[in-house]
Length: 161
Image 1 (cartoon, rainbow, N blue to C red):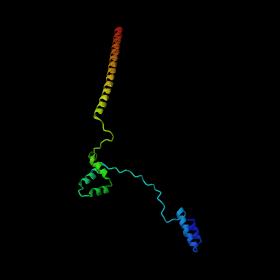
Image 2 (image 1 turned 90 degrees about the vertical axis):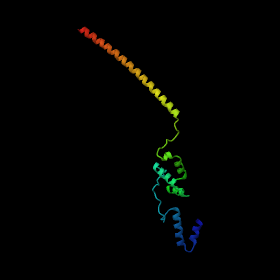
Image 3 (image 1 turned 180 degrees about the vertical axis):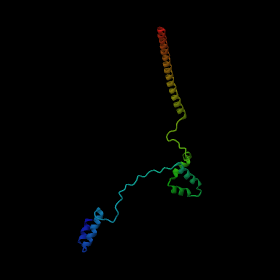
Image 4 (image 1 turned 90 degrees about the horizontal axis):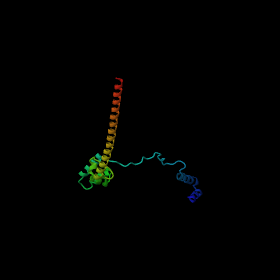
């Protein structure tokens, strides 16, 4: 580029060529005015994953089930902006489409759940037995204290009479 600048300076129409060369240099370095609009300083929002409500899933699956001609399902998928794998998963799992969502993760084993429930009830039963024994002990002590106080009150009444 330096050689082209020297060649431009040596030419007969040096003032015009010099202006053209300088304008090109200004555009390349970003100095001076340019005809391109300035870049937008706004930050673009982060793209979010699209989520479909159960009613939308039901509607799309029903529309796909009504398609009879070749290419209709493809057109539906393009129009809705979904992949064929999504439609296949929705069809496979009609319970989710129906609105009764299954819990994610490992499914509970009924035998293990029953064992946990039995252990919990056994612990609660033992706790209640200890509370009952403690309450009976307290009641026995209260009866003895009451009888002693009654005897003491009877003795005081007998002495004063």
